[in-house]
Length: 401
Ligand code: F0G
Image (cartoon, rainbow, N blue to C red; front, side, top):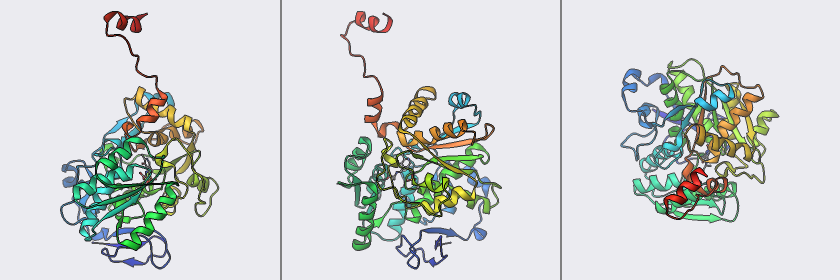
């Protein structure tokens, strides 16, 4: 049992209404369950496989979901990086290990399932890349056509490759993500496609399971959860899921929700640092972490509430800091992530060095996408392979001379 509720004015809507914003005040919507009437046997929960669908009582899908077996991602102890930073309890939840290589799959299994449940005939999104890859794959699995709109020339190669190969209609506009979102939003309203950006409240329901899994894997609540922030949906979703767990009495405290943005694209950080009531969009976002190259985060209202209500914070990191941490994760921990994902750990490093993070904290960084998403940025940072004649002599000479 659930309703759709406006986060600002509390207006309520029936689940079957196709809505992305409150028709009264234009603010964001969220899914609200009657938590007091939901019976969950936590022991039975724990016996189910770790996955998005372990938590199905807290998800809106009623029938068989459109699933590619998403979730159940590893939680790694960052032993070496943690030692270097003086943080013995530093962890990374590797969302790059989802079916299409990012956390978006958690949202899309629920979002595309809801599209089917609501009888929609086609789906669409704007994307910096991962959302489009994921939507294309889940639409393929569901057997429903997908349209994706990308900022031309600003999407990592692996993500475009996925969207194309999974058969979405891929359109690249000569403008940025914020404009692409505006355009797809109008398209969905005028032509009845189902919008699966994170302004869709059902999609965030899937993504909240990152937090639920973390609690189950860690056997408790971390002091802090750190996420890279672009459109600000994921940090909002994780916070919502944990609030629900607290309401159910499964946990007592919430982690300090901490958002990390790139220095060239930091409207949420500005709002937190300067205590603005809302985000002031940044007109020209720029960063090597193209996944989070977003100037007008649509979920900012929810994200600011998540950060403020939990005593969390926000910080930005430079492209150099992001790339350095991408290399550290790869070389010191064996964890391959794309640049935006490394931002969360780079942010922890910065906050620990600035004394904002206490060294005794148990910290979970969400690393959101896989290394292979953006091979071009990798190749630019690394020495090329050493090419030699196919002789033992040449081999020994490059290795030992
Ligand atoms: N990390 C990665 C790898 C992402 O792809 C995104 C968002 C984020 C972090 C930020 O998450 O938007 O919920 O704050 N990517 C979107 C996309 C915008 O289109 O793929 P957020």
